[in-house]
Length: 388
View 1 (cartoon, rainbow, N blue to C red):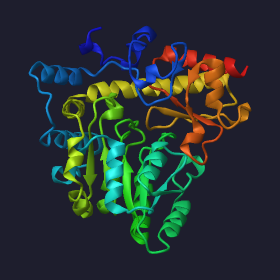
View 2 (cartoon, one colour):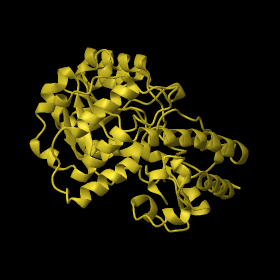
View 3 (cartoon, one colour):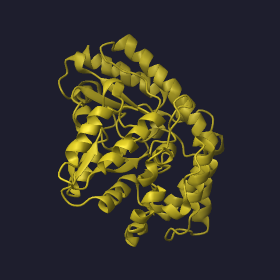
View 4 (cartoon, rainbow, N blue to C red):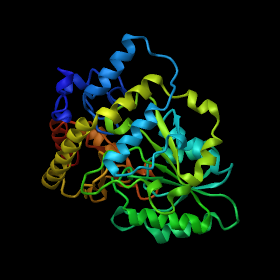
């Protein structure tokens, strides 16, 4: 395959046989007869600008430690062009190994052992795993109608978490994983106002930020009124399929610059130099490739909705404008709390188990849309057969 030509429908380039040659988690966790639509990896070839940057670095042996501000500068340019936001300041950006390790470091800066961390369930399972592992306490503030932020529930959680006068943080997922909800400027401004009222520090995982339809428009949390004291984690990892090339950026609003400055120097030793090179190239030169991916994802959302309506109408699915994930409400299928287990055992399709996402996840499953139309079509056929 000519890698320079992969800007045309990246999600249609690779055959199932080609994908099965991969040795990553997505393709090696389950036996070969299973279609893996679970972990957040995309079935795409590497974007040509990224491949070129890596090839050039390897050709000259540029495989040492990361240095400089090129990654932050590239993100600043991308944010300016894509979101109309000029708020990525290089002096308030620090490189970290990946988004979740960056989340851990940011939470360490603004909370102490035993302090509460509020999350909007159902939410990305590592929010629970990493927070509890670092000796913080998870407080759930469930999403409301339409799988959107419920500001009344959030206010109650903020009030309860700070009632004793202690510190608390709010770990916000934006866009939201697993639902694909894209928070509006109004919602995020209301969050910032609540955080200021109750003295809650906001840390935002914005890893899926580039994967939002033009109609919805991603809004950086640090860009809204009151977001000046927030801390954000961003990365090119999800949008360009670079999970194996570790690098992310921690960003501080103007009022949080002092917090970020306290981050231990050794945290910056964890990212991969090749990772930083890859992410920088993606943000600087990968826009056309990303647009093609977004077009393919829009088609896959429509395809999935049509396939489910025809073959599994009992599954409730509302296509969402963010991420490449589909949150499937399977409760009417009668498969119990873990429908993903039935789809795997009977249909040989691997989805993410809904209960792992916390309260509100039972009876649900998360499906990764970032695959070929052929694989998606076969997966739904198998799922329908599994419950037939």
